[in-house]
Amino acid sequence: MNDRIYLSPPHMGGEELTFIKKAFDQNWIAPLGENVNRFEKDLASYSGRGHAAVVTSGTAAIHLGLKLLNVGSDDEVICPSFTFVATANPIRYQGAIPVFVDSDPHTWNMDPYLMEEAIQDRVAKGKKPKAIIVVHLYGMPAKMDEILNIAANYKIPVLEDAAEALGSSLNGRMCGSMGDLSVYSFNGNKIITTSGGGALLGDNDEVIRKARFLATQARDDAPHYQHSELGYNYRMSNIVAGIGRGQMKVLPERVESRRQNHRRYFQALGKTWLKIGRGSNGLEFSTESPVGIYFLKEPSGFYSNRWLTTILFNPEETDGITSNEIRHILEEQNIESRPLWKPMHRQPLYEDAPRYINGVSDFLFRHGLCLPSGSNLKKENIDRICEKIIEIKG
Image (cartoon, rainbow, N blue to C red; front, side, top):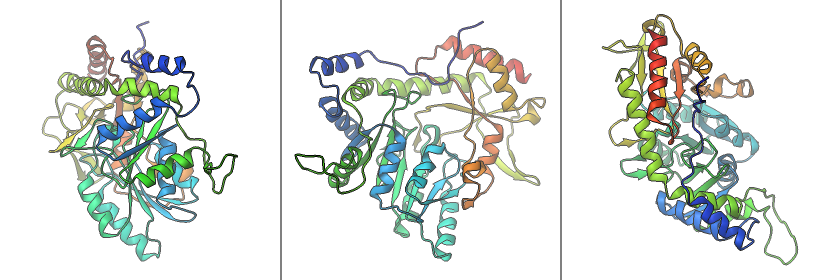
C-alpha cells in the first residue's frame, strides 16, 4: 500500500520549538504571557488591523464577535449557506436565527445581490438582520466591496470569517482586515496551525479588550474572583501561542506552496476554468473545452491562498463518473479527499432556518471535491493523484 496522502496536514517550520522552550524555561505554561502578546501583535501587523485577541478556536472567535456586535436572542444574522457549520453554530449560541444566503458562481462565496434581496425581505417582515457573517471559502475572497457597500446602506455590521483565508487578499487588502470584526482559525488543517486556536481582530482597542475580558471568564478587576457578566473559557494558552509565533515566520512560504499545488493540479488536469450557466434543468456546466474537470478562477484583483485546491467533475464528460465515486477510488489508493461543503440549508440541524437559494451551492456540493493541498505535499504525490484521476475519468 502506498503511503497515505492527507488532505491538509500540519507543517511545522522549525522555530515553533524555540518559542515553546522559552515558555517552558520561564515556567509560563498557563494562559497569557509573552507568546500570547507577541502572537497577537504579529497577527494584527500582518493583517493590517489595529488589534487581535487570540482564543481557543475560530468558532470561539465568531461567538465573541457576535456577542460584541450585540447579537442576542431572536435576532437574525445573515450567513452564507455554503460554509462549514462552525460559521453558523455561534449564531445559535447567542439564541439568534441564521438566515442563509446562497453563493455566487464567480467566488463560491455569498452572493451580494441575493444577500440584499434577503435583507429587504427580512426588513419587510419586520426582522432587520442584526449582523452579517461573510466567509472567504477555501481561501477565495468574497465580493467584499459589494457586500460592505450593501451592509453600510442598511447599517448592518459585518463579521468577516477569514478562517480559511489567512494570506489571501482583495485588491491589496488582506482578508481579515475588511469587516467590522474579523476571524482567523489555526485548526490543525489550516494554512498555519497552533494545533487548535483562532483569533478575533478589529481596529477598536476597547472592543478587542472586551473580547479578551469575555474570553477569560469575564473576571472583574478585583483581588478576589468576581464576575458581573457571563464569560467564557476561550483564551489561548502561552504554549499554543508559541507555536503560532513560529508559524507566522513561514506563512508567506506556506501560501506560495499552496498556490504552487494549485498550479500543478491545473496544468495536469486539463487547464480549464469553471463556468456555470443556466439550462432548461437548472444550473449546468458551460464550457467550450469539455474535459470533465474544472477549477475556480481568481477574478481580477482577487488573490487566494488556495488553502485547498478544489475541482468539479461533470459526469456527462467523464463517462458518468461522479466526484463521489472518484473520492471513493482515491481513498482505496490511500489518498484523502473531501466533498465540498454540504450547504447549511441541507443540514438537518438547520432545516427550519430561513434561506434564500439560487442553486449554486447545491451544484457545487453535487459536483465538487477537495484534493490534497498541504504545503508539504511533494510533486511526486501530486503526480500520483493526477494520474489516478485521469485514469478514472478515462
